[in-house]
Image (cartoon, rainbow over all chains, first blue to last red; front, top):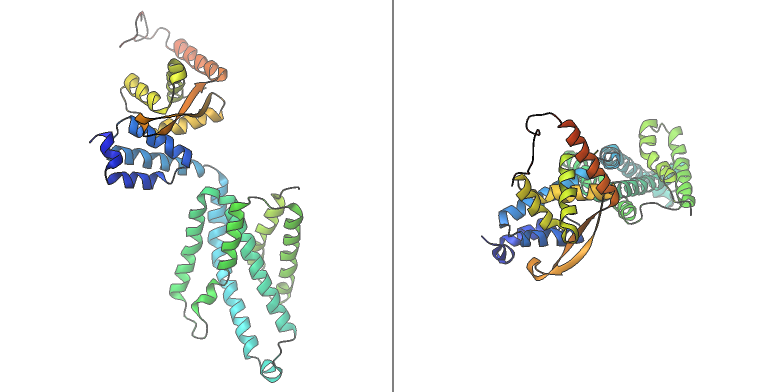
Length: 234
Length: 109
């Protein structure tokens, strides 16, 4: 099998597909080298796969992808699903409360706490997603897989009659938005980061008095302070 | 100190001079060592050496032979030359007196 065949045959599509995992400039150089070297399709495929594996492995020599995937994406996914469920139940109780039926208006401390929890869920989801996106960079697909795996696991085992399974995933759209922003802009402005961290911490205060668990609170709040620590000065 | 493959790569690139780029270096390395050099090993090592300041690379011209794709040209920096010289000196020193290095007058083809 000669080089000409390699780039005209159907197997070249497979090599092209795998080569897409490389940065554009490197892809061009490697494909040019393979063509010049007259490699067979099989040899070319092995060469490109080998380079892709080496490139991916090199990314994991740094602590950042490990932190993002196993220190944040995986545990936060479980905790945020639990919190999404808690918020959904609180909403269900508020909607079903007699006061609502009587007046048509939701008022009182229950509603204030519910509102705090909704904002907290959004803030935790966004900051967590942002940190995952900004820290993971090119390993973001592993972090995404480790976030979705618990979701699939819990969706499969969800057995609450009165609530939809989707209640577990309330955090997901905001977290994805945060991850996208984090991937695009690795660091945010320090003033914005401080405001966000203070808001997140302030929103957790009502949950302390209502028996909110400390460890999950801090496990979900640290990304906000991580953003402060790594923020841009200007 | 350089690794064995790093030394081979720098020396090959230095010998090729202005004609040093991925495909040719790979071919030369294969011919010199009798082992085929993988593209993965080649480019990850080039990247590492460039990060250390021992090599400089840039995108070269595209040729029809390569299907109109550009080359990644390689040049050894003065720091790279020094690192290769240090490695060679260390090998020469440590090989002094050993049977396979004694009275060696010519390089095998």
